Length: 168
Image (cartoon, rainbow, N blue to C red):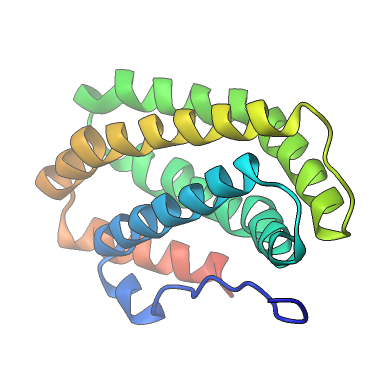
């Protein structure tokens, strides 16, 4: 794998026509990325890990924050009050995990340049993976079904426009 770049394909922009389908597909993609992060946490050195670390650092720095903005700025505010407690919990989890994501990006940057990460990398990465998997499960079981029941086609079109604008 030396000389190659690890790349994680982005979702087809056409999926944005239905923002809930896009977010669900992104959740599936994120589960795959979490699997890569978990494997890297268990074996953080080697030629293949350099490219993987670079790609995961980019995901944590750019794509995941955009996804979180999609949810927190476009989806969550449009859900009814019945989803309020779940939304508050998810938003608080995102805020609490921000420092951990920054720590992981720094550790991944070390690996991406061929250096050894600190002893904190493996437990931090495994904590993040476990926490974010739980987060995704709550979104998939509670938030997405509530969104599908309650959002009008007009609301979905507005969400689509907002998400597309974030992506330029």
